[in-house]
Image 1 (spheres, protein in one colour):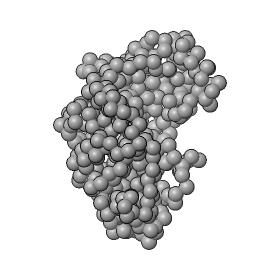
Image 2: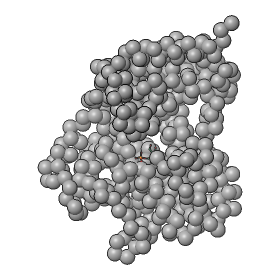
Image 3: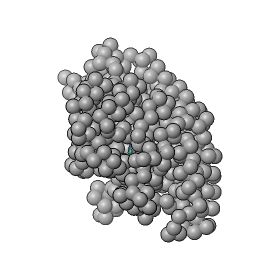
Image 4: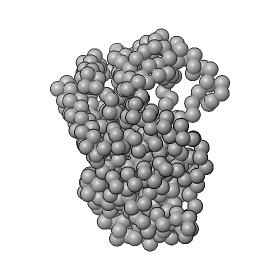
Length: 446
Ligand SMILES: Cc1ncc(COP(=O)(O)O)c(C=O)c1O
């Protein structure tokens, strides 16, 4: 007798077959590039089986692949693409900066403007420095905390992602840099406070995302963040909030909205206007470590103040994403998530959309999701099936279920997306667990 497990395999085989039949040009690209790059890839997140689409063009919130399919973009470059693919304000700023010279080998007129804007916008930032990525920003913030405190250990949280060499999926992975990390469960305020207290003689920093992003859009309980703030202060350690993803949440970022002021904060993604970007900053006495006139720490980077990023970042934040626009996008995202959760609830299936504002993640589980372990046993085939179903319906989202609203996404796109989720739920309802099995993940083979 065929089980539900077999039926999921069949549905996925069918989806992959249709994908392969529809995407020969992407396959050709994949095969060609695999001769020169391992797995045709230099950014792990972009791979999915059988092979990823090659995207050849984008405009507004629409992308086209190598086979000519058109998709509404609901991934937005994993949040760096907030402004979409062709905002005239960004292009003009980049053009203007380039007309004045690209590689100036010096301080320029743009970096100070962006630095001022960031310090005025994010209350935690007394002083700021630029990097080329969020990863570097976190590496520098950790380094600053180690030096400032003269201590070695750093508390991070299970499921957190702070960059390519700072991943804590389960435990630190093989590519995670060898700082002395202590990995604690997310949203366990009591456990974290106890451990931070116990480690206080050698604890340099507590590094936390106010919402786990790559870990599944799982928001921190406000009281968890407040508890970390107090415990870090008591331990003489620095609190570093990683707002690489969450700085778009409200005009001042998520930690400030919750009322928590870190000692250091890191930024990245959209703040560079879609160009390579990262930044770290915070208390003036900590950042003084990097003052080239007097501080002990060097922080180099050929492209740290490159004019293209500085110009695009300034134009984006001033012309397209002032604080009111951040508030409006947050509300728009919350409204979408409510609609998606209503679709799942009406169908009575174990599917939910967690997150805050414009960032959300699907999870095939009923019941509370407070840390990544709550979704650890979900059958990954369902996520994959949903991904292919969304592609079929003309929506480009992430294979891991991450859904991102960028500014140019239209109301029609949003309506269509909700319909696509409803279509998925009704087509595959027999493969999904009923929500009444509350809290039980759909186990592989279950
Ligand atoms: C919370 C968080 N921190 C840091 C990073 C790393 O940023 P980058 O990819 O620019 O190195 C990411 C990237 O996804 C992120 O989500």
